[in-house]
Length: 247
Image 1 (cartoon, helix red, strand yellow):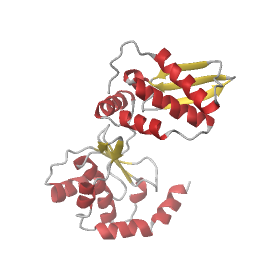
Image 2 (cartoon, helix red, strand yellow):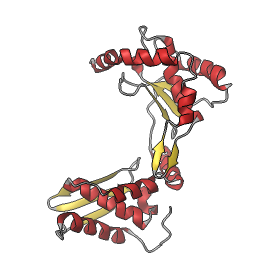
Image 3 (cartoon, helix red, strand yellow):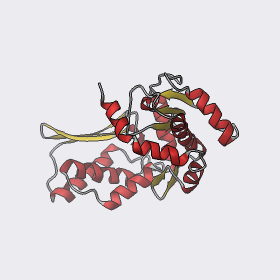
Image 4 (cartoon, helix red, strand yellow):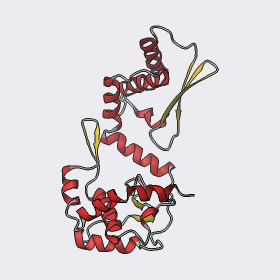
């Protein structure tokens, strides 16, 4: 996973971008390409053209990337810049590298070091996440789940009702559910779902990430009000969306 060649640097990587331009534009390569590492919080990369000059910024996590990963990234970025289809081989190679255990450890540590998690409070107007977590942990997990930071989201959301952040070890529940019209079992179900992400961490297989494994889904259906909660969320999705969009 880690680049073993001490001689490989951005000068070498730059050749991959020239190669990509030749492949996509049939030998027409920009006169000037500037390639730099940038200390992004996440695994981000950007490419743009300014005054005829191609500016490329790639995550400084790629200082440890293999030449193959650099070449794959070059073809991905140039393809996006030119509106071309990203080659399947490049996409798969990039995913294998970035989803590898070694790179994921670097990415998580980088996010912990540079990132900042926005939190509010576990106690909402209608529901207390601390109380809900404790009850669920006892009933379904025999109190084996380590308590993460529990917080309501800063705003009402509707696309994502809950989120477990393994980097900052926190569970965030949408403030849309902190409402007197929302049944308590719905809030408990969403918290339970996020707790399962702690019990069943993301798996990486063949360059792909699997968040909801068969074991995860099997445990999810053990929630006492699984069917009722799923039905309520589906039936009230439009209300959550409407309320979230209110100013």
